[in-house]
Image (cartoon, rainbow, N blue to C red; front, top):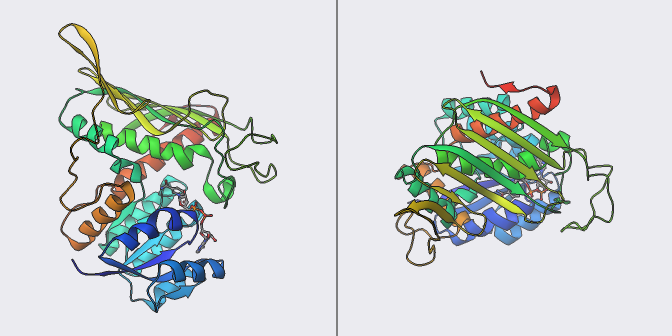
Length: 359
Ligand SMILES: NC(=O)c1ccc[n+]([C@@H]2O[C@H](COP(=O)([O-])OP(=O)(O)OC[C@H]3O[C@@H](n4cnc5c(N)ncnc54)[C@H](O)[C@@H]3O)[C@@H](O)[C@H]2O)c1
C-alpha cells in the first residue's frame, strides 16, 4: 500500500483523541495539512502530529485549493460536515467524516450525491462497530444465530455526561443534543446488527428538563445554562417496514441509576443479545434458559489479517483498504444516511406532536 497524504479539518477533541493518534500508529499515512478556524489549534496540532513541512490553514477552501492530498478528515462541529465533505469530494479527495453524518437527511443526500459524482470513498466515524463485542455480535447476526430480529433497543443514556467543551450544547451548530450526538452511535450499531435500513415511521419526544440547572454533578463540570439550547434527553420508537421495532433512548443527563453508552439489545426468534453487562447471549437450550458470556479476549476476532484490535486503528485501516481498492468500507455513507434520516424523523415527530412517516 502506498503512503497516503492526509489533510485534517477541525483540530479539536476528536482529532487529538481518536484520529491523529491512529494516524501516528499507521505506517501508510502522513498528515500534511491542518485546518482550524482557530489558527493556534491548527499550528499546535501540526507540530504534534504533522510531517516536518506540514501546512496550516484557517480556511478549508484554501487547503483544498492548494491540493496535494489523497484523504480529508472532517472533524468539525456537525453543521460543517456537509459543506466541507462536499467540497473535499468535489476537489477529488476521499473523505472520512465524523458522526453524525449530517444535520439532517437533505444534507446527507447532498453528501451521497457528491460521493457518487466524485467516485471517491466516503465513510463516517462510527468506530463503535469495530469494538470486539460489536464485531462478534454482527458475525452472530449474519450467521442467523438470532433468527429474525424483531425487537431492539438502541441505548446511549448518561446520568450526567453533558459535553461542555466546543459547541455540543448549541442546537444551531450541532442539530440537537444527545440524540444526534450519542443516540446516533447506538442507532447505527442497532441497524447494522439487524441489517435493516428500511424505516416505516417513528414517534419521538425530546426533553429540556435539566439543562437550566446548576451544581449538576456533571462529569465535565457545570454547563453554561444560557448556551444549552439542545435537548438533554430524547426517546424514540421506530417501526421498520418489515414490522420490527426499535426503542431508542438517549440522554446526556437523566436521573437514572444505570447509564449505558452506545450499546444495543437485539431479540430474535432463536436468541437475543444485550451489552448491558458485557456481551450476553440469551437463549434456551434443552428446555432451560441460558445466558452465554463470550470470552472476547480469548482468541482473536479476526477482522482481517494484520490490523490491530482497537476500534480507531481498525476504522482507519479499513478505510485505507477501501481507498486502495484492496477492501470494502465497513461503514458506508448510505447506511449512515439512514441513521440521520431516522434521527431527523424523531426530531420531527417531537416538533409536530405526530408520528413521522418516512415515505
Ligand atoms: N466518534 C465519536 O465517538 C466522536 C466523539 C466526539 C466527537 N465526535 C464528533 O467530532 C466532531 C468534532 O467534535 P470535537 O469533540 O472534536 O469538537 P471540538 O469543539 O473539540 O473540535 C472541533 C474543532 O473544529 C474547529 N472548527 C469549527 N468550525 C470549523 C471550520 N469551519 N473549519 C475548520 N475548523 C473548524 C473548532 O475550532 C474546533 O477546534 C463532531 O461532529 C462530533 O460529533 C465524534
